[in-house]
Image 1 (cartoon, rainbow, N blue to C red):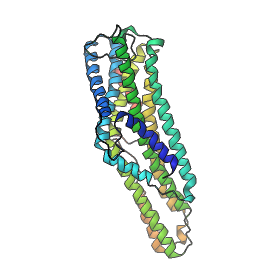
Image 2 (cartoon, rainbow, N blue to C red):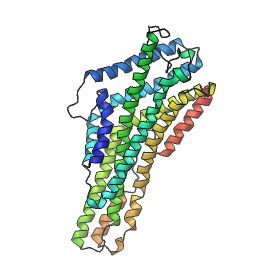
Image 3 (cartoon, rainbow, N blue to C red):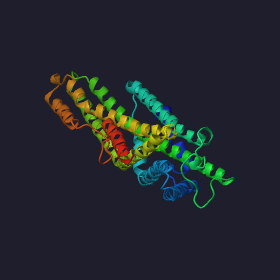
Image 4 (cartoon, one colour):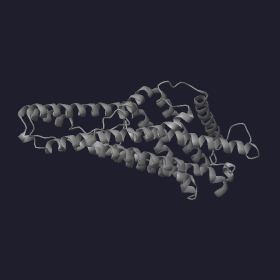
Length: 363
């Protein structure tokens, strides 16, 4: 494995290590950090339920709390799925680590590392932008929330006088930071995995384009068998990704729709509400995942055309049959699925349209 890819994987694992959730460590076990992280989410859900039941008559803060609570619910579910699917996730990362990178494909490997690095850092910047919520008491104080960043308080404790206001503020900051770190690590790993599949297909296309169709029959057959085996291993890797992430994507599609719908109701009442930054980050999360899934669909869809475009007519009949076998198995484009919706750009647009439709019904 090259050093650049190792650096990216280490960068993605660091937040999980800080949270005590580094399931990519074969010797991982529950630690006080893990218990603290899980305990913070138990407190967040209890605080959200308590806030919602006590603010039924305050539409703006109620919908804002509902929106931010949906993020907490998304992370709690995905945290459970991370622990449940840790063996599959380890297998996925191990396959990415063990990808063969010959000198002829070094340019493609460098391009892969660059694209992944840019994507991961873009995710980090967008998710960290939600920490601007902590500046709300300074730049946009809201008495309805006791001038706190989020629309929730620690239950059964005063929240508008010192030192309890400061305790709630610290709790909001820590909770927001935990959410950012977890989502960055999980979504960053998912983007890395999808792009790894995309560039595996790109490498396979390059093999087909560089295939010497006029070579000796034994050499040509050996190369075609290797290409067919590589194609099958790529399909198995994509099936592994689908098995690992299909529930994550289902949760993502459903709760992002709810988060955007509720957040839009807050902005409709007061367009200056800072929750807009938070909604942009949520929409970007789904956009980036769907964009990467769409790349996978496009690359796999064009694989059969690339295979057909080589000079197959000069190949011996047995090798033509091998190529025909590969073309037949590449007819169905590869894509990840969230059970009800595939991870493609049309699904992103469907979620955005559904969010706006539900917003217009509620508002």
